[in-house]
Amino acid sequence: MSVTLYIPDDSGALALGAEKVAKAIENEIAARGIDAKIVRNGSRGMYWLEPMVEVETPQGRVAYGPVTANDVPSLFDAGLVSGGSHKLSLGKTDDIPFLAKQTRLTFARVGIIDPLSLDDYKAHGGLRGLEKAVATVPAEIVKTVTDSGLRGRGGAGFPTGIKWNTVMLAVADRKYILCNADEGDSGTFADRMIMEGDPFVLIEGMAIAGIATGATKGFVYIRSEYPHAIATMTRAVEIARKRGVLGVNVLGSPNAFDIEIRSGAGAYVCGEETSLMNSLEGKRGIVRAKPPLPAIQGLFGKPTVINNVISLASVPIIMDRGAAFYKDFGMGRSRGTIPIQIAGNVKHGGLFEAAFGLTLGEIVDDIGGGTATGRPVKAVQVGGPLGAYFSRALFDTPFDYEAFAAKDGLVGHAGIVVFDDTADMLKQARFAMEFCAIESCGKCTPCRIGSTRGVETIDKIAAGIESEKNLELVTDLCNTMKFGSLCALGGFTPYPVMSSINHFPDDFKPRALAEAAE
Ligand SMILES: Cc1cc2nc3c(=O)[nH]c(=O)nc-3n(C[C@H](O)[C@H](O)[C@H](O)COP(=O)(O)O)c2cc1C
Ligand code: SF4
Image (tube, rainbow, N blue to C red; front, side, top):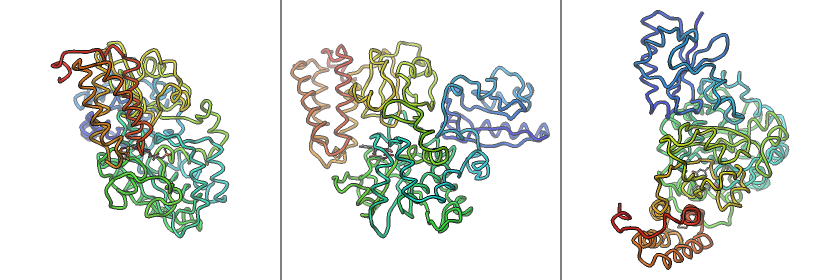
C-alpha cells in the first residue's frame, strides 16, 4: 500500500532546509524501492519544529522534527513510513500541545492539504461558502458577514460587513476587491502562510466579496519579498480559472469574478490602503487624504473593498457555517478567532489561531514558552512596528481590540515580538522614530519632520543632555504626531515610543554618550 509523506513547501520551512530534506527523502524512497507519495504541504506553524515531516498512518498523521537531510536515512531505518519511533518523533501531529490547544477556523486546512490541489481543498470543506454565496442575494451575504462580527485583521479592526455594505450600495460601472497582502508588520507571517498553504481559501473569500458587492475584478497586492506566495497564488488563480471557480460564470452562476496578482513596491507605507492603491495604479506610494473613502472612490476612482488576507480568508467559513457559529468565539466586540503570530526571542515561535480573549501572559509564557535565550521576558511589542511595548505588569491584558486600546496599545495584525531583559528600551524607542523617518511617505509635516526630530531628541536623552526637558519634548512631539498626522504611520509611532518611556523609565536615565552611539 502506498504511503503519503508530507514535507512543507512553506518559505519558513524552506529557509530551515525543507528542500534538502525533501530531496533526501525522495532519494531514500527510490533507493529502498518504497511505494510512497510526497505532498508538499503548507506549514503547521510550529517553526521551531521545521522542517517537520509527517507520515499518514492508520492512526492519523505522525510527525518528526526538526529534520535535517542527515537524519533521513536513520528515519527510514526506524520505520518512518509506518510511523516508527525515532529520536525526532513528535507523536501524532494533532496531539502536539501547541496545535491541540488551537481553534483553527481560518487556518483549518493549512499544513493539512496539498495547497494547489483544488480537489483536496474541496474534500476538506472548500468552496462550500462560495456555493452558498452564489445561491443567495448580495444583501444576505453582507448581512452574514456583518452579523458574524468579523473585523479587519489588517490592523484597524474596522467591521468588514459595514465596508462591504457601502460598496454594495455604491452605484458604479466597475467595482474592485483589493486584497492587502503587503504584510509589512514586524513578526507577522499569517498572510504568507495562508497564501502558501491554502491559496484557494483567499480566492474563495475574494469571490464571495465580489458577488456580495457587485465587483467583478480582484487584485492581490503581495509584498515583493514573498516570491513563494506570489508563485503559489499565481498558480492557484490559474487553476481556479480553469476549473470555473473564477471567470465569467463563477461556479456556473451568472456572476463574473476574476483575480490578478500584483507584486508590491517594497515600502512599509504601501500597506496603507490609499498608498497601496496609488502603487497599484503605477503612481508613487503616497497616502491619499480621506474622504473620499476607498469604498466610494478607491482603486482607479471606483468603489473598492480593501481587506487584509486574513479578513477575506475568514469569510468562506463564515458563509459555510453561518454568522452565529463564528460569532460564538471571542470576547466583547472582538468576535471569532485571530491568528496570533509569536516571534522574536521566544522558545516556541509560530502561528497560534485562537478565539480572542487569551491574555498576553498566556500567549508569551505558556504558549510561547518564554524566551529562546532562557532569560526573563522584559517587553513584548504587539501589533507591528507601530504597536506598543508591553511590560510584564500588563500581561493580564486579554487579546481583544478594546482591551489593548485601553492600555494604549493595539492588536494590529496580531504579531507579537518578544524581548528578553537585555533589550534597551531607549534604543527601541529611537528605532521606532527612525523607522518612521525612513518609511514616511513625506506627505505631512508631523510625520516627515517630527520623526527626524524625535530621533535627535532621544539621542540627547541618551547622552544626558537636559534629559528631563528632552523627555518632555519627546512627549509633546508624540502628541503632535498622534493628533496631527494624516495616517497611522506618523499617528501610531508614538505608541512604541511612549510605551517604552512609560513602562521602562529606567532605560531613559542619562547614560554615556559612547553607549548611546553604539
Ligand atoms: C503604515 C500602514 C501600513 C499598513 N500595512 C498594512 C499591511 O501590510 N497589511 C494590511 O492588511 N493592512 C495594512 N494597513 C492597514 C490598511 O490601511 C487597511 O486598514 C487594511 O488593509 C484594511 O483591511 P481590513 O479591514 O481587512 O483590515 C496598514 C496601515 C498603515 C497606516
Ligand atoms: S503620517 Fe507619514 S506616512 Fe502617513 S501620510 Fe503623513 S507623512 Fe505620509
